[in-house]
Image 1 (spheres, rainbow, N blue to C red):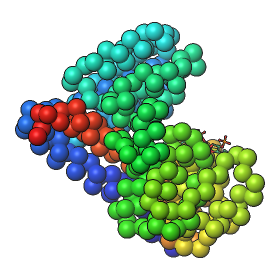
Image 2: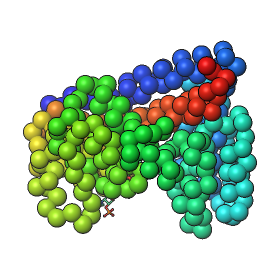
Image 3: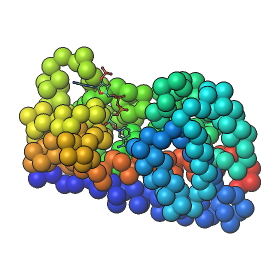
Length: 286
Ligand code: NAP
């Protein structure tokens, strides 16, 4: 039976560290601020934004919410981002995705100052990740690496398989595993013979967005299984991409949903905002 990787415990560990550093900065006269932009009234986005605000409060980061109506124009959104880029008390800017269809997400991301891009979605930050020289890492993959480290899970020389190639999860996940010396395979919807690939994985990361996509027959005995998926089942309950009750019998470690990767994403956001504040105030701190 697999050992559960408890995202609540690891995220608390990360947040405790952030809180201490935020307090130390405050004693030096430096406050840490995060601007959270939400456009429209998508209920899932609202929940994510509320959770991020709560986490800020818990670690002493000042959060400012900018809730814009659904019909906000690109010009209005970019003008807000420009204002926040120049606002001294704001160290990190997060624009909750997805945006309403008429808004260009790529352009929004490109307009956030890279040094305040605490989601690490800007092409400059993505480029830094490629060359292994970065300030921020995308919150979900970085949170997963933190969990592996906390549980002393070896990545060096392991076969890691990532299912999913999105810019925010799959691709950066593969890059971080590669940087930690895993041999990485990235799978996607056009991958042939997926099962043959996944059953060789020592570390299997599922970031697909489909309930019970990863079944026990796809998993190697003793594999570490990381479930990034956040789906709703037919009863409206939150569930991941992995058939948890069957796969946990075969894996050595497994993340549950909820309580696995999700809390780590928010904890990493707090860490990134702290990093941004330290960099922007480097002259005042040292
Ligand atoms: P996405 O952009 O929709 O990407 C999904 C990926 O899955 C794509 O690369 C797609 O391949 C691949 N895929 C779809 N069907 C497949 C199949 N039959 N076989 C193999 N690969 C297949 O999603 P995302 O943003 O990466 O998110 C993935 C999941 O993670 C979602 O459930 C999301 O809600 C969740 N998520 C959770 C957190 C968290 O904090 N826990 C954070 C972010 C996302 P193609 O590229 O070929 O289409």
